[in-house]
Amino acid sequence: MGQYKRNQVEEAISRTLGEKSATPSRELRTRLKRLLDADRALTIAARKAKSKVTNYAFYSSDSPGKGSEVSFSDYEAFALQTSLRVLDHAWPQSFAVNALRHIRSELESEHSRILKQDPGKLFGKERIKRQVRPGDLGVGNTDPVFLTLVSGQTVLSDGIADQTSAKVCRGMERVSKFIQENNAHSWTLFELVNQAHDLEKQLAAVRPRSRGRS
Image 1 (cartoon, rainbow, N blue to C red):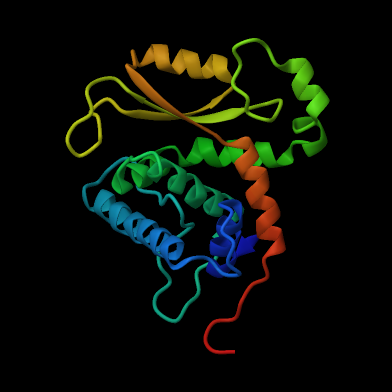
Image 2: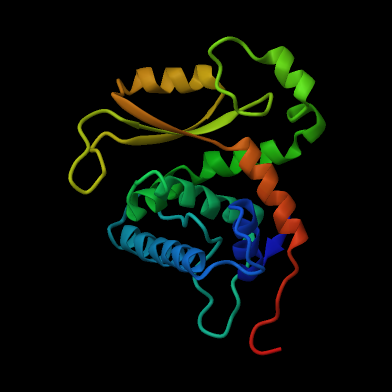
């Protein structure tokens, strides 16, 4: 797995979103910057409060200080992309970042497993056709994985339910079990396999750009 500069992450995510410009839009860069800033702030606050979860969602380590360039892993780029998808479903930014902070270990492990799978078997149309059953979600791969958000009570004014939980679920059976375990009245699913492989291709295609003026 590689390490990528911020411009590579921004451009790769821009391509997965279908942006037509040669460079990421200002709106996208702003949204990503806000997520990164929120990650630093929320993690620092969690450490001050002596929280059990003190890792970052999108960083590997503390800020190296001004003048130093931060690199991102394949997973951290994927986590940023995933958090954008959560925001697009009207979840608050603080929730999106904290959810990714809390499930980082399991999501990072699953992301690594997903990328090791054979794309030919994973995305083969005939294999998908043979495997699909009536009522299945059309996910476009043979081994779907879902980021699952479930809410167990009425959503509060800030958009976060007291009983909102997040989990990485491999297959719909695990999704259903998680929903039942939490007695959820509503849930949101984000399929991850297609996104992980698409982003990995785009990251490999984007060249790093030197800082400062060329």
